[in-house]
Length: 53
Image (cartoon, rainbow, N blue to C red; front, side, top):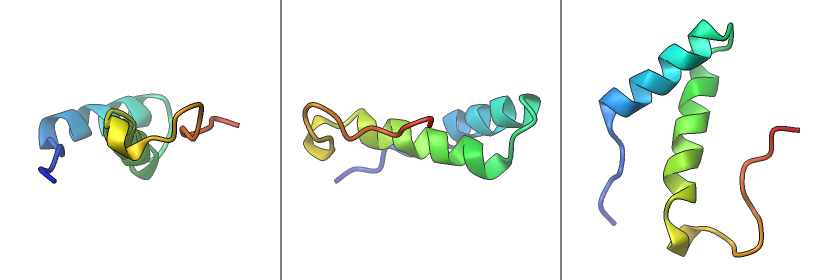
């Protein structure tokens, strides 16, 4: 599987999290969740995404 990681995109998520008063770790967690969620082979149909609750 080809890596979908992009340092520039990751930094955007980190910057957004920090701007919102959140941690760098949260920004990276959101970014990695979106990477996984964008690949239909890795996502359960009908659910299984990252919850905000």
